[in-house]
Image (cartoon, rainbow, N blue to C red):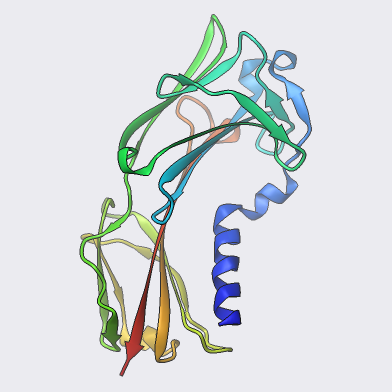
Length: 235
């Protein structure tokens, strides 16, 4: 069980922060000190099925993704769906703007509006789709091909599939799957990497796109949503 717990913890850490973030600076500057065309917009939307809220984390950086964080000084401000977000900071993250919204009402369109001053305003619109299983997974599954039907995906979306058991040294499954017609299939050959017994399944929907009206060098919108299930695998 110790190996199992460590594997799950490692997955969450890897998914939650990319290796690039290790090099990001956490110094705090002022939005007044930099022209708006040189501000990098770092927008992150994260959630998981076991949590009743979605976290929207917004940061502004000077001269690129790895630049110092910026505190928004008046008249600069940022709003999410029309609600003004207050700033905060820590030594680890630098300056940031965070808001949490109920999971059950988050599905659908949203917008982020960053105002630099009366003449400069940037609006980002996106649609968030919760990842869901179309049907419950039985408590026990045999080693035939496993077929999971998913909702909240468009054809061509990529989902990370992770399956771990409780046996030390077992390889498990960790791969990216391009969704076709809303289905993911785990073959008998893949299941050979798992031992009989308790299995934990993680399905992770993740995307990263440039912020609209900005180049990739000056903004990104990163979204991630996770769900997990447990079942017994038998012959």
